[in-house]
Length: 140
Length: 283
Image 1 (cartoon, rainbow over the protein chains, first blue to last red):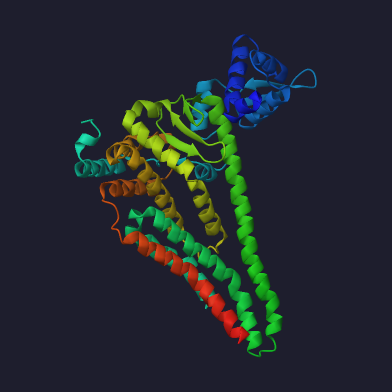
Image 2 (cartoon, rainbow over the protein chains, first blue to last red; image 1 turned 30 degrees about the vertical axis):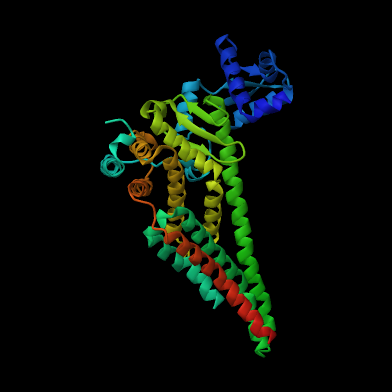
């Protein structure tokens, strides 16, 4: 089932956001699920309900803002540009979770450091380079 | 005896073990040792009270039968606390990961099925474990790291995901949270976190050698953004430790077997006491 594959890779989340941004640029800041669905249909087999589910999830994550339309259906607007939303998600402002939970949910390559600690790390790096030979990395 | 063992294993052993820095040079064996200690603590804590009562009853104390109820209630409480804490921690972590995955999928550029690159200048690298796992980088990371160092970081993150290090951390977080606060050993949790990082570093080192990984550690530590810097000095001293371990030779050959034997012994202790207690009752 093609829709399943698309969704599994998380491609649909991005496609929906791109569609909402594109419609916003063409003068429609608030769009319905149907409009997004129609835009995405070109060239693929995609259920309306799948798009609805994904848009609901994007709204929960704070990327879309949900508003009551004139009819029964909800309208959605992007909560910001890609750059704005990326910046706020980097700072952890989009999710309502306490930061301890957020930190535990992901495995970070490393924590943040002060200048003094970095100097210390650089000294340690010199030790690693000395013991394992400079030829290894190729950068002087 | 079992009660004493439970307290020792929960409160004393973790502090002593965390000080044995040589363990870090054999991280796989060390993690197994930690798991053995915590499992043994759980077994002791759950079985201590009912066994004590049982022994008293056999010893002829008439009132012992009445103590059975609170003893069983105590065991039930310990077990219930563990399960409840497991449920809470698990649900919270999974919800946080699910929501964050939606964010990175919607905002990031898909490099392949797993890797997402966010359009942001701050270099960072992390992974979201689970069935629909992701490695998240930023454009800043790609700029800061030349090819081989990036390979090292990716190998590190993929090692976390492949080996499900998140489950190991979750297990210890649950145990930590369900232990009574006066018996909690935060150094145990910190040490386990470090060991998991050292394990992933080993995987990266096998792929690229130690130098690119060490350079990546310095490059990413030096480029972090002031706004995201939460009081994380413990993390940095962990980074320093990881660097030092990269410079060191592999652990001496005898270390891993010794740690495995220790793990087996620790796990056997409460079971042996349990068997002994039951055996003496049968007699």
